[in-house]
Image (cartoon, one colour):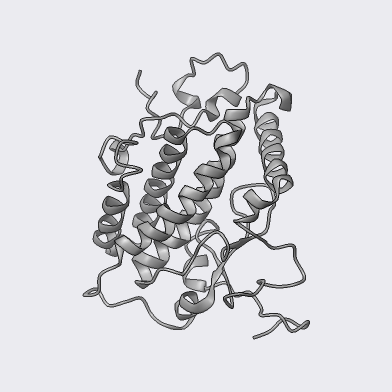
Length: 263
C-alpha cells in the first residue's frame, strides 16, 4: 500500500502494537523513507547532524527539569545524556526483542535503515525495514518447536545499534559503563514486560535475555540475575534531576534495578 504521494506507507503490525507503545513499530520498504508527510530521520543522523542530537538533549533536559521543578541549566550534561540514551536504546530494544522472541525473526536493522520521528518522550514512532516485519502482520507466531536466533539479535541490537548510540553520546558525558548499563536495563525491562504479556513464551524470552546479557559488552554491567533480583552495576544518574538532589537519593527516587537500592 502506498501513500497518496507514491511513497510506501508505514504500517503498524498489530501483534506488536497490542503489547504497548514501546513495542509498536512501523515498517518501510528497504532503501526508502517511511512516508513523505512526516519528518522521519534515520538513527544514523544522530551522529551526522549535530543539531538533531543537541535538540534531543535539550528536550530531555527540559523534561527532566520540569518533572523535578528545576531550571534546565541545573540538569548536568551526563544526566541529560544518560536519560536521552536510555530513552533511545529502550525504544529500539523492545520491538526487536519482541520480533525475535514472538515471531522468530530479526529485522535487517542498522543505524542507516532504522527511522524515527523525533518527538518528546520515549515512545516516539519507529520504523524498521519491511523485509522481515511484513511477515509479522500476516503470519501467526512461530511454532513452539522453533528457536529464536540470539546471535543475530545480539549482532543487530548490540554490535550495531547499541554500539552506535554509546559512541555517539560519549562526547556528551555518557561513559561506556553507563551506556552499557542502560542497555542491560533496557533489555531486562523489555523482557520482563514481554514475559508478563506473553507468559507462555517465557522460556523463549529467557533464552534470548540470558544470551544478550552475557554479551561481552554487558556481562559486567549487572548481577547476572533475572526477575526482580536483577540489578545493574551503574546508576543511570536520573535521580540527580530530582528536586533538591543531593547525591544521596532516597529509595523513592531510584529505579527498580538501581545498584544504589538498599544501601
